[in-house]
Image (cartoon, rainbow over the protein chains, first blue to last red):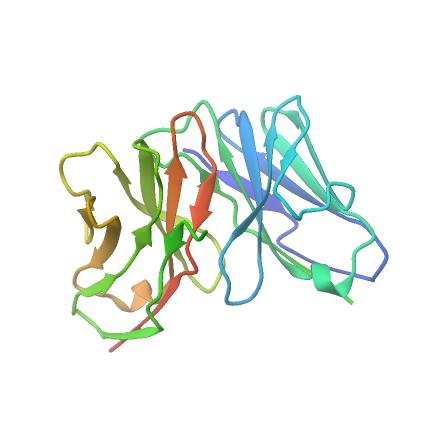
Length: 118
Length: 115
């Protein structure tokens, strides 16, 4: 149990376009989802926390108008990178916690989405 | 201030040997949780082991054990009997307080297991 999927697994887009990444909890209801960004050979940096049905809470330095997060249901959160630029190229990972956070693995991670902006 | 510190450079480990990955943390909250995750080259984050701040015993999960020294604020991961599949990045992370699932990650340790 506790499977989180992400789609797409990788995407290449042109500078100035927008890209949407989906994060789904497949077998549990995710009351909270987290979005992280990871640059090569670096750690995961939390971008925002989203709770179902409410606005996301963004970390300091993360532009909320550029990284639009929607958590409209208990199984789906989306991250839209608007007007993407090459510096937005990164590995984006979501995680989810909620009603099936068994044991102490309180966040279940998706497989990640590699975004390349040309 | 950095909450999780992982300072070891990349490590080469002989297959079947044990390896210890260092992690120190900084918090003033008496309630916290410490996690270790493995990230292979494919990118997914794999949960390995958890230690709660009030846990009396060191956590163990198969070949993984956590050397929790609360007074020193360290939570080192020990991998016994290393396997080639253990080659990956390893991240230490901390959650502070109850009901707050936000995790702060360290910079990670690169481990390469050699036959």
